[in-house]
Length: 549
Image (cartoon, rainbow, N blue to C red; front, top):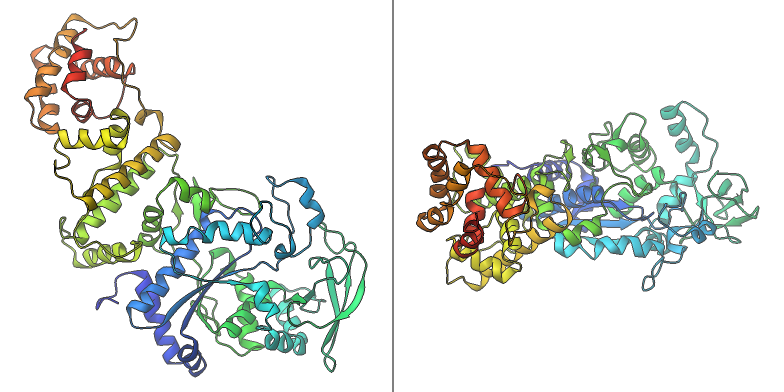
């Protein structure tokens, strides 16, 4: 950890360390298990990128802990024993028959995966290396089967009246359930069972699979007695959350702000952890305060939902946008600030890439910041957002907008690199590692153009003058000088300035000059920055087109 704490991940790591050192229970736990940072997700369908915010936040905190000499461990658990309570719109209707069953016991929609839960969860986990997420993956269902939560289950059931009191105190209405959901021995459903009695002596739960317990699934009516241990059922999730904290030794687990509202799930779990299990709730909660959750990751202001199929899928976006850039977006944003990102919005991606490049220049001392705190923060953002080992020297940089232009003009990566070398953006003797960075940026640019860029950034270079082109004689005369200016100009700035001089010499409006040039080049009224575009197209092709005026 840097001497001066400037980044939110380091600040949280430091606060967790102080809390652990001042609490004997947590100190003993951390000494034995390390500093456990937990996150969890129910694999109910395609997992959206909004969940990725929590994963990156927890991964960054665990990394900050390790940088500070703490044994930080990020554990991500798939809550695969939760019941299917909603059928995603994109799923085949044949899955309707599995409503109410644990996700881990439902077949995968795609061959090659162990279950429905495994398919949707592993789609994301398979991308973690690309995101630089270093997580220990757990299955909540397997943890139940292994007996990991047995002690907590018994303590919860032994103290069910205290749990009931907590629910009634927080929600102000009767709570007449036994806090345990058995898996029906006859139909395999967990969402339809109601436990009515806990036999403390024999340690069995009496339950019934109610036909009309919920609207989204129909129980079979079976009644029975079952041991609550070793995967025969689960605790309700607000109770389970507290049980996980103690059982796994969690010292830090944040969550979305919706869980941290008054009378929200975190308030219930904190009370159970403190009053029933006698375990200090993890950061940012304490025994007496629930703390504050992180803000949402929204797409054009809309909160994303796995069950409703809203938003961009975590695995999907990883295929078309570089995870290192998205990780940078999440690491640079303070956790209590909303991230409203839309890759389809005109400049969101361009600005994001430009900011990443600026942070990289600052890290390598190529760009200065007067404020030392801002300087250190930018350096730390670069470190925490980087996927693998930090480069020894600053990578060669090509702005996304320029890369998008040359990849279209050059037709492929090799052609684009030649254009960048001819225009002086790249040296002729490009090293292997620098070529890797350039190819990476060109690949990103191609994906941007193909998937997200607005029409303003897409173009087809004309081979002939557009039919019906109408230009005044003065504008034609000015445009006819473009090949000569292009040949004489040493860089984009010089060429751009000469355009304005040319307009003055020919006594024409600047807007008419630029419109005419774009009409000839692209058969459009607007386009990329003209000087840069002409230099990318090259003197030969520009001469061929403008020589036909």
